[in-house]
Image (cartoon, rainbow, N blue to C red; front, side):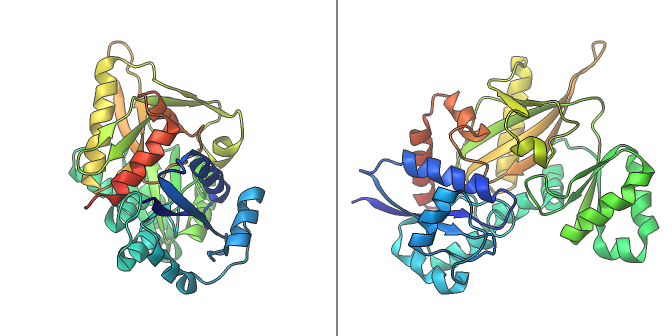
Length: 343
């Protein structure tokens, strides 16, 4: 019997188009003799599109509006063996859809409510990883209430970290709302932007020097394995929204040119983070590495955890596993198998 798979794509995040491109790649890759796949596109308004509109959205590569209320459509998931929530960011990767599917009793690909929610929230991620002894850059948490009622308190937090620093909304992906603050004159505007998008904002110290950006793919549930380490290179000041989504602005190097001991340390930290955050199925875990000078040891910092990374055939996560010998078809099939496992 073929397994009936519901593939959710689109959604309300800045990676709406990436999700749709990923969905088209997954649809083309899943073997028709094993799976009966039904795509369902969620518009930018968070509404679920019917089959005819889903087809048009996949062809167009976006769905700005239209569709039915989620609560009206959710009962339809009952007829499927598994849901592949190929969604990014808020209302997709943050535990909300995962909670809906858990209540419906439908297996799904990826982390559950806890792993999704904690990994999405940058502050909670840092708190959990700190307790697990995983190195990170220094940071401070500020709230919108603090910024409105006592702005100097938030400015003092920034002063403790020093300049330059990053200001980030705690719960957004796609580098949306992130600012690099180089001077005191830039701080207030960066905070205003971040607080317009989230009530909780993280102030994050800069790594010393220009760090290398390393990435690792994790695959599995209770016995996960790590991919080779990849490196992302780009010419921009930091990996902002434009750099991330403009062709030719960044390049992937897999495997990264690293000493064996360092590569193994990155992989070990990635597996430890995956376990500490209660992730499942898959994750891409990103690091900063600052090379040592004059014989000094380099510094490694975990940057972020993505529980549903981009999944086109040219995205970093599938490419990391391609370097480990996994074809795209085999990787997607394995993720479905992992989603069907008892947890």
